[in-house]
Amino acid sequence: MEYLNFAEFYDALTENVEYPKRAQRIDFLIKKYLHTDTDGRLLLDLACGSGSLSEELAKLNYDVIGVDNSPAMLNQAMLKKLKSQLPIQYLCQDMKELDMFGTIDVTVCTLDSLNHLKDADEIQQVINKVSLFAQPGGLFIFDMNTLYKHHEILKDKIFLYDTEQVFCTWENRLHGDTVEMQLTFFAHDEESDSYYRSDEFITETAYPVDLIEEIIKKAGLELLAEFDADNNLDVPEQLSPVSETTQRILFVTQKPLI
Image (cartoon, rainbow, N blue to C red; front, side):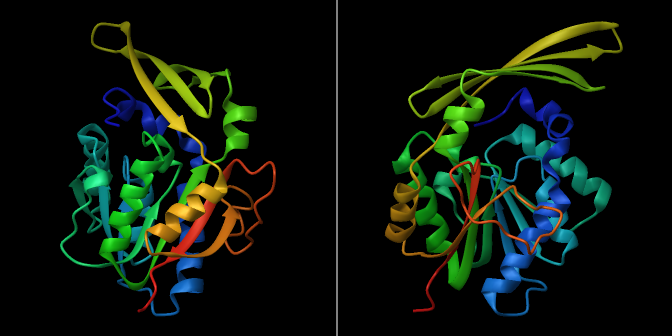
């Protein structure tokens, strides 16, 4: 998904994501499950978007590669890199065609990026690629929206966002387990003192947990743990179990040593 229009406003509309806290949680999980010194570990931020999480993980001494298939999003990431001067490498790749130069110690894919894929076969294709390039003993940590979130939280809802940069209407339509989203942006152009409109269309599909677990197994990865991805972010080590009302599940998986 290229996010041609969304990229310009993405950061303004996701200020509540709390990237530093999510990075701290990922760091905690890596230290818990990798069982080795994490400083300088090669970390792949898959579907890195505008680079906000990549920046936070680089601050925690990971050697970060960010991959995304949206040039517009990567442009935003590069602007952050120019400001921070953090040594992050960004690559424009479709995650289904992931191609790394060598093996990766840790791969992360957050904020339901895998839900944007067309179907379970594409998810399998991506996780197979991650497994292929994972160092033996390496981790793949990712999250996905749940069926509960799609059917109870997002279903046929309209959300409004009003920031200094943009006014956005976010309209959802549920079809089966897929949410079709139409985002309409109204932004002020200072030069002409007028407002311009742009639109973005996004789809996300949710899947049963047992299907995702089977995909993980088929990719040759071991499922280590599942957590609620959004609870207790203020305390990274305080992880909540998955419940019936969990909106996003965090999967921690590992490539076997042999």
